[in-house]
Amino acid sequence: VSKEGTTPFSYIIIDNHTKTRTCIFTEGYPPLVPKDLSRTKLLSALNGARVAYFDARMPATTLVIAQEAFRQNISILVDAERPREGLNDLLNLADYVVCSEKFPQASKSYHEAWTETSSIPRALVSIILRLPRLKFVIATLGKDGCIMLEKCADEDSHLEEADVDNSMKSLTMRKDDSIVMPTCFASNVTKFRAEGIGSVCGRLYFGTSEKIPPSELIDTTGAGDAFVGAVLYAICANFSPEKMLPFASYVVSSIRCNQNSNKLL
Image (tube, rainbow, N blue to C red; front, side):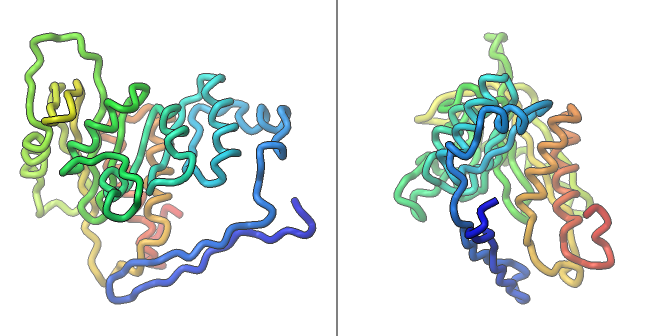
């Protein structure tokens, strides 16, 4: 604690018409730097951890902690909301990645494009190929749910090969619009092909979101954090992807900010 310092805080602007929010973040001062972390504090912070979570804020300090987690064989989940300084270093250590739908195709919004693919499914193939440590990557799609690509061992040379975009379309066509609660649709283990990028052996998942009546929805503050938190819990609880994605979506729906229905928080 710095006696002369300031606490970080955010202004949150809520649009009552679109039910969305904009966060204006003000960093604290002085920032946490690597020299503030003694070896004792670092080991104490990671003691007993099964999964470590990072989002590339305070990149130099974050990387020090992530590298120690890596040395201790602690699984690492990285939240890749958008390109940030130091994010690539973290991604190279990651076992799991959760990203926004804008992150893989961020070239129009940011100078640094992480992938240059024409679709989210193709982007997930690209991410898996670029980050060989990854076990899975999830792209969140807001009200449209999420997509997950899980890497599997490529031991069967006779595996069916399929275009990843076509496979994703097949999964989305299985969605039943009459079902309100979150569901998950999974492919068989397949060799997913993305032309011009490469192929990945794995399973593709499409998770739907809960249908929330407009009258119950106030804003989406905390939705992304809630989703990632639920995924972290699911990893520690050894949930299958078919259980994890609906669970995470349900947790997100619980922060709809309806004071009468917010039972999980």
